[in-house]
Amino acid sequence: MTPVYAVTLAVGVVLLLGWIAALAISEIVEGWDGVDPEKRFGKPGRLAVAGLTGFGLAGMSSTFGGWQTGFVFVAALFGATGIALAASFLGDETDTGAA
Image (cartoon, rainbow, N blue to C red):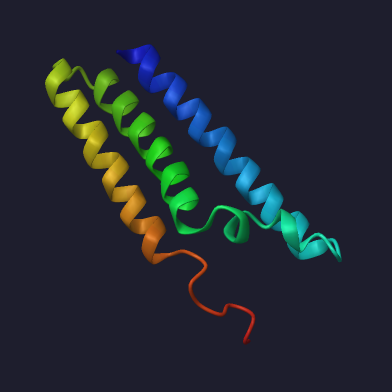
């Protein structure tokens, strides 16, 4: 199962870096507002990226911690849920440019 967690983590990190890059481009380059991933994919997209990253990270961590396969899978599910919850509360729901 380690390769499954590794691939999931790698895909999640690549998507996360792509999300950050697209957000930066949409903020910096004038007229590129359509590239904003929050506008294109919204909260479900943000939760999917966070869930993939959390699943892979928790799975890899508990696998290398020497846990049994069933516990590793449960830990990966908890990791995905925890990070997805954090992403839902820390998302683009508030106006951060009011400073």
